[in-house]
Image (cartoon, rainbow, N blue to C red):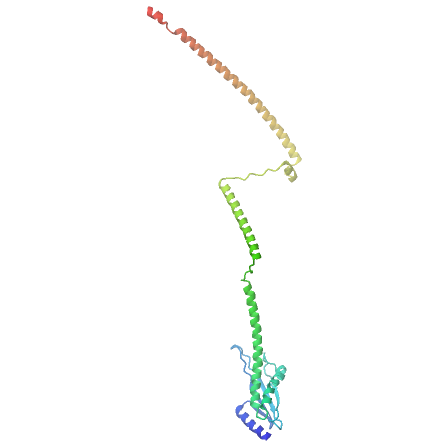
Length: 276
């Protein structure tokens, strides 16, 4: 009975997989299936191909078939499927289907399950990679957004900011006032008084030497003598001027008395004129 069921299943599989099935013997064959992978339009990576090799035990389908999974020779390596590492996982994924299908033809179901399991495995890996990319992008965006985020304001930070701001404003006002005063003085023709250095500062700075001090002392002595002579001459000159003024006043008084005397002598006598 098992052999008859095996032949019937094989004939059905021929009609389902006319180009994908290949006999190895009367009880063994291979079925090729292409794993469909979702990818970007510009991604030209070929879809992976799996080959399920099936060998019937004599008691099949009452017992599980012997299975193996391979790939075509020189098949390109897929970025999300490595059969050498993933074969055990894919075979294990077929076990529930085998247990549920004992006593019935199951190869078509096994091929479909293998295809679905491989596609799910690849999809999970794609999603994991995309999730990592999204996480990195979100992290980069968060870091970028931090540039535009201000510091969180607390009472302490606000008071510190206000103190610094008020201090800065006061300094600016002071500078503006000083600049305005300087500008006003400049308009009025104000010239800042030059600060004179003391003798000690001149000596320490090297601007004036000992010889220079001696020369200055000699010049200063000469200046004093000259000023004394000027004062003496001025005093003498003052006395001469006073004497001249006194003499002029005396001359004026004498001239006035002389004129008065002449006037008295030349005036007519009224009594004598009447008698004549």
